[in-house]
Length: 562
Image (cartoon, rainbow, N blue to C red; front, side, top):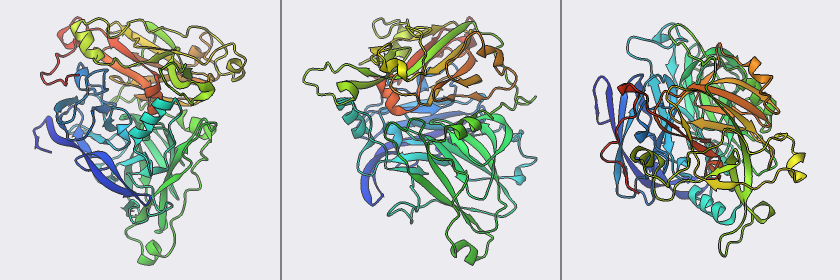
């Protein structure tokens, strides 16, 4: 931290490569300030954080502040070619991160290629001075553990090289070799025992856990042996507390949970493993571990027996456990933390999600994806394509034509039994899609409903859908096909969870609502990074309102150039 006033925090970050050794092999990785995971930002609700990023790496980079609404300030949101041109090697850019209503755990990560595999870290947003967490009686009644960041590690391969290979061949991305907790696979992996993360607790105390899923390709189950957890927040929005034996944290999501240290004084594994909703594709079936130790236990108890493994950690394909956990999330909806759910929608979208194919048409190309094609992904059968040499925000702000088309459809091109795997196989719905830079324009203040619908085009799968610039209310979810005549009657408009990333169930749907009161250009995409690259994305452009405080800020003078 360079300096601090009552409302301003300032950080200086350097993007740089360092050598690290994991799974018995040394690799060079991209980092912030040589740290993996990167530095934690601690701030308070309402603070402004300025982060000056200087790129000493060997490739373009941007940083996204995941879950920060950035009111009126899309210029610092971060996704490459959406809100900015990337920071080129040797260049710098000062991000202005405006914290408004967020309170709890968020995170930051690179938003270029697969760089976020190693370029990521936590954001801890504390309550304002003079206020307190709503789930503890006093500050002395609770202590915090360091943030728990779940991730993935490839032993032999740079993640971006894997991406380049997949793009060149049209194949899927090779699965990671290990799940990690704070960058470490844990002592179940070779050459990993010395680096295993260890956390000390004292019997009788309560600890706040901040769990972040930074994985590129997987949702994650997480549990602590011998201890139940009490969920108190998700995506930096408070939830009605509920006890659980495990968490299911979708890619991009965060969970705040309380752990009461009431063990017998031994050692206990914290464990994380993938939730693989589509086991027909290759996936990482490993389990990462860290160790919880009781500091006040006798040395013999701490060292004399191996850690206990959490028996409650679900199996890698346990879709029922994932959905049962997610269905329990509810907003706190208290007087101090009210909610504002739109009772009706001015704009409705049914957005189908699919993994698709593109024909292998490039000159001299040899595609080895399914059916000799190239894997792709889409929303409403539009496979999103970034502009090649401009950013959408800059083009919108300056009225430049030819960069995007404002015609993203409100629904799929055809209606069919979306979740029936036999329909595409019979040839009634083809697997092929078309590329395009198609965006959706929203009127300022409109109440928007988006229903995300999974499809079986190349296999049903749970998708973590993330919206930049907004926290939305998840008003409904279900399995099968969304029924417009029946399902809205079951919406929860009283205390739906407020999130920035929703786990759409495998072979099902999820409905979200939000008010389009944040003017700017905002990316919406699946948070599995290979799906982002394949095109499971679109952009919302929210128009300015009439009042000065309802208009987008002007761009800073140092925006990177393409």
